[in-house]
Length: 406
Image (cartoon, rainbow, N blue to C red):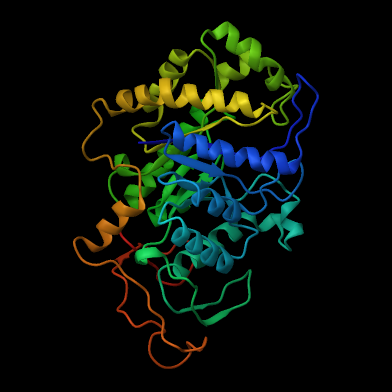
């Protein structure tokens, strides 16, 4: 399993001091948090995408590339990338470039987003949110797997003989998770492509996410990618820890009560009972999250929201120390007990390259000097086609797609 943290990049006043950090300070602090996540032994750092105050992360690829240059093994992801309002052509280029710069330590979580006005800001219609998610990903999927793409859809200008550059590192695209908190169509989309499904799991009771994950597992098997147990599942979570539960509640309560998302709503106690938010001792967190397997089955990735609601940097770093030193090592052992052999490991670039090429050489794309003209003549690349497997029957797009084996 992979363990890590995700940030939504909110800039929130500390309710205990009344001080609001500047954008520059919050950006610097987030880089420090990501680096510390690697230092304490976590596997993943994921960053959200927003285009409005009080959030700062409008360009996740820029930030993640900067973090990649200062880390060695941390997997860098998103939480989430807006598949609805971003151009899939630019997504294909930006994340392939990030993949190269990070040496393959990149994946991304795609989602529709939770800020309604973002649609008109980028010239889109919120009423077309689901069709946009389906069509845009169908194109992104092809752009990473076909050197030359002809495309015509409903929401963007057609493409003729288009090549997205650079090609994915080693001919293997970044792994994609489809993130959702309430939309069965997104679970269906993830299942169709054989991608991962990330259930944010921070706002609703477990029964809500159990239905979404069960649907994804069932449809994953239906599309021929494996058994339901072999589907790739990720979960979000929230914790705040101290040596005693009383101390944890005392310290976290003012942040909870004033948080932009759930502040001035249910009490901390009620919210903790209804959702996976766990405010208590390290052992309480271990017990709560070791039990997630009973609710959702064996899964591959567990991320925690740690740096939100105005928590000061030093507090977040202390929380990461506890998470990395006291909690995650125990959870790794607990969640490995009796884990069936057929349950796949969390996806990594190296494992996916091995699955695609075996002992053969991975692709190294070398372009010809065609100066952008792919409409006639041979392939724009010198090498042979990337090995691929069929992706299944059509889901939201008429064209046949191919996907590199995981």
